[in-house]
Image (cartoon, rainbow over all chains, first blue to last red; front, side, top):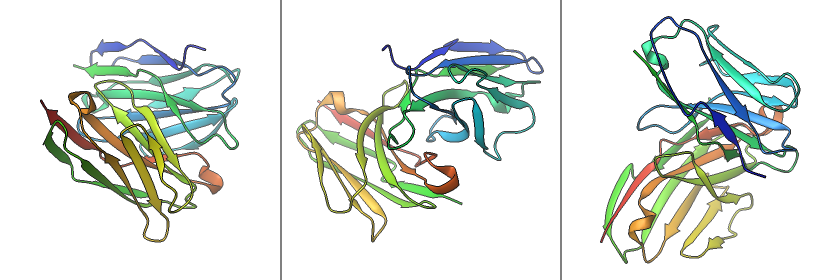
Amino acid sequence: DTGVSQNPRHKITKRGQNVTFRCDPISEHNRLYWYRQTLGQGPEFLTYFQNEAQLEKSRLLSDRFSAERPKGSFSTLEIQRTEQGDSAMYLCASSSGTGGETQYFGPGTRLLVL
Amino acid sequence: EDKVVQSPLSLVVHEGDTVTLNCSYEVTNFRSLLWYKQEKKAPTFLFMLTSSGIEKKSGRLSSILDKKELFSILNITATQTGDSAVYLCAGVAGGTSYGKLTFGQGTILTVHP
């Protein structure tokens, strides 16, 4: 068990481009969460999955954002037509679900939109 | 809307001092409160608190939850420079948003030698 992993760790893109991030949760964790963190703030909830089902999306998640977890294992977060305001750290966390409320975080993907 | 507020926002102390970090919360269908330490990378888990009045302890760190007054404190005794970090607390929701975390803005702790 190597913990939660995320790729890439850093991404620099130009405004208007699309980007995709990947998260691999701790094996056998059935819940997977995405958060966004900007400088000086705590992480903000974006969305979460139980297995392959996306159960909740934050109002922060505009229609340019989409997340998937097709086989209930890894997840991807795509941002279309990036804007400078999307620059942030994108964190993924996983938990074991029922009775397992502690979420374990990956190292994050730091996005910079120029 | 769920809300978690931490105080102070920043704290500067010298090695050996004792610090108390505060966290108040308003979380729908509250289930538990989590404390994390963040050092220029992803948050690392410290404590999960579910029951009122029961102190959780790990080395020099301890934490307690008051579900009546809706707050938690994190104590660090005999601080060391390695304790310098951002300390985050998060409320865990239940019901239809089971497991969703609402974080506070964090307390930046700086420990000088």
